[in-house]
Figure (cartoon, rainbow, N blue to C red):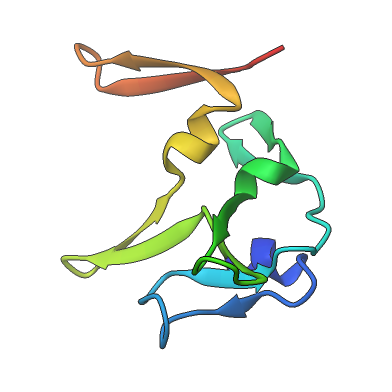
Length: 104
């Protein structure tokens, strides 16, 4: 996750202001193409979906949508609806798996 935000000019870890696992960056920053690889598939997010929006009304600082949490001694990325808005997402509860396909 830190490698993703390192590519966004002005991005900073926001533990002190928003909580552990959050990042902020200037809202005017250009967001480069972001991809995440699952198995053999590299999936790309639309850059604007990495930007949640200003941290406060009228702020020029935006919060990133990709976060990280520590749970029970294990870490987990949270990609959430910002991630899923880029893809067709299928939840296969019977086989305990999730599938993604690039939206066109």
